[in-house]
Length: 177
Image (cartoon, rainbow, N blue to C red):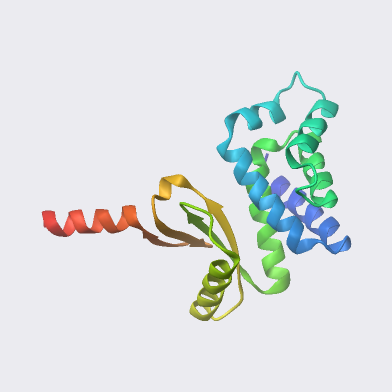
């Protein structure tokens, strides 16, 4: 799938979510589900299996998402699955978030943490990033056990690595040099 097609899907999904007035929630859910699919080979395989029909893939989406996701989000994901574009779901979700950010003049920060953080911590982190960037920042948290501890934040092309792993690498380099 070309970048143009990814942008086309993202634009269509964005317009549907905006028309249904669920832009923030749908964006968050698309983003989270895309990362789940990316990190779960069995789920990705089941959703991309050419031998499975659309009905079984839709049933799987219903089973996985159930009442956890907004019905509009589930329908948007069904469109991606029916179109055979599950492998590009992360790119579509990222393009969707970029369109939502541009519409709201906010940046999206992908924050990777080792363990779930509280809503208060998420809010404080968003406020700190907003002050730092001088514009609103929408925080999307991803639990990633490979982080070990601390936080790795990506805003656009900028990566802020505050992980314990990075600190240990810096300490190791300073002791070696």
